[in-house]
Each structure stands twice: as structure tokens, then as C-alpha cells.
Image (cartoon, rainbow over all chains, first blue to last red; front, side, top):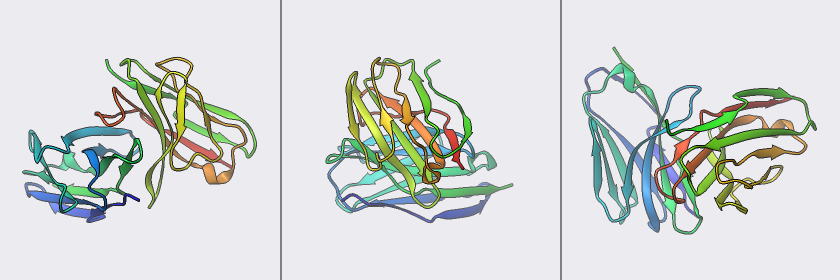
Length: 112
Length: 112
């Protein structure tokens, strides 16, 4: 069974801080890992997708890394802004399920 | 504009009254799926479809039905809704199962 854990469950930081969100998983048999953003009452928006053969992906102020051997991924947000406030979810494309397996998410609040 | 649409966005109904939540995508995606999101449990897959006329169960299929008669549409059917199906439902699509997922805006269902 694939289990995905996101730590911390919630995070509050002042504007301008760099921060790291963590995602860990128990089975390294994955196709890829995706990070999503979810705003209250809205759907999920894909931020970054890392294939299993890749180590990291970058988009603007966001950088996601993947270490399959240790079962970990991190999402690094540079120079955080109040507009970054949202729930961030990681999801794995698991080889044995034809599906994405989601973590419970990290609720981020960036204070101005 | 590439998008996944869901209707209705909000629905309050009573136990046992059959309902259908529609999902449509305009990206010619092969893969579509339904998730439910509950506090503390994250997103769980209900059903998925790899192509027209091909559907399969996800993690929590009990009490739900789906059909995939056309590539663009993937309705979710609750034949006899119960209060434990009160949840936030998301439809998603992608070109292949683990490629970048596009999510609909969500349907908030309340069953009384």
C-alpha cells in the first residue's frame, strides 16, 4: 500500500520568507510526483510535475525536488507572498494502482 | 480555453434521491477520474476511465456509478445517495493516467 504524508499540516510565515513543504511516501515504485495548489472552495491547479527519472523541476519561485530512494519530495517557495496562501498537495503516480495517491495537504498562510 | 467543467457546483439533496454530477473536458484527454475530498482524509479516487467504454474502480467506489460513452464526458451517478456521501467532488482529466492532471472546480454535495 502506498501512503503519502505531508508535513507540516499547517504553516504560517511572514511575507518574504523562503519556505519548504515536505512530502514523504512509502513505496518508491512511482511514475511521477505532482504538486498541486488548492484555493478555498476551488479546484486543484497543477504546479509542478517531476518524472521518476528527474531530480527536480522549477517554475518561477517554486522548486520541487524528488528523491525516490528516500521516499521524499520537497516544494521550495522563495520569497513568499500573501497570494501564495493556499493548501498545497502532493500526489504520486503509483505504478500499482493506475491512479494518483494524494497526501492530505499543507495549509499555508503567508502574512503581510 | 482548456478546461474541465462540472455541474452542478453545489447540490443539496435528500437520502435516496438519484442524482448525476456531470463532468466534461475539452482537451481530448483519454483519462478521466472522479475524486472525493473529505477533511482529514484528503482526496480519494472513486472511479477512473482510461478511454471510452473503459471504466474501473478506484479506492472508494461503493455507492457510485460512472459511464464513459463519449470521450469528453464522464458523469458520476449516485443511485441512492446517503449522508455519508456528503463531500466535495472533483473530476479530473489527463492525456494519460499519470500526466499532468486538470481538475474541475468541484461540486459540493450535501445529502440530508
